[in-house]
Length: 192
Image (cartoon, rainbow, N blue to C red; front, side):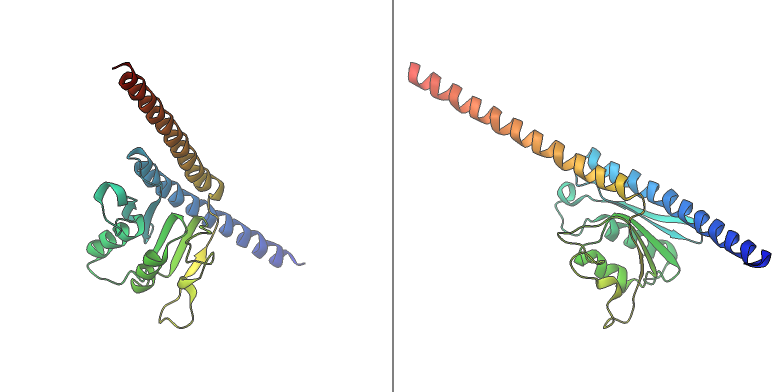
């Protein structure tokens, strides 16, 4: 390998490292959005949209809070980004999301013509970027996205795992409290 080849390889490695650090920076911002969702007892999913090195929109899951199936992190972020750029096309943007998009969100991403989607964790039950189906790179559509998976995957996955673990513990405690209340009421009724 010549010196020229060695230098070219070193530059390429440096550029890839720099690119990965940028992806992690923006995914960290998406994680902060997901934490906002967790703080209001929503499934912790967060999203940011970046254009020309600047975050132009953010979103987090608010389905239960707003009582709307449409209140997904990606949908909110896409809506806000479109308003910001005054166009429905987001052809020069990158979307970062903590969990692989569902069918609705994947459809919105394709419709908005977002070229690159960066995903933290995959969603084996409803993911539409390769887990169940890959709507983001389907040949029949007029737009396909580059998909980058697993950026801060452990961190995004543990956020979801811990949320659902805490939820199960809460539900079990609530069930026990309801049993205790029912037993107490039965005991009171038998005394009368």
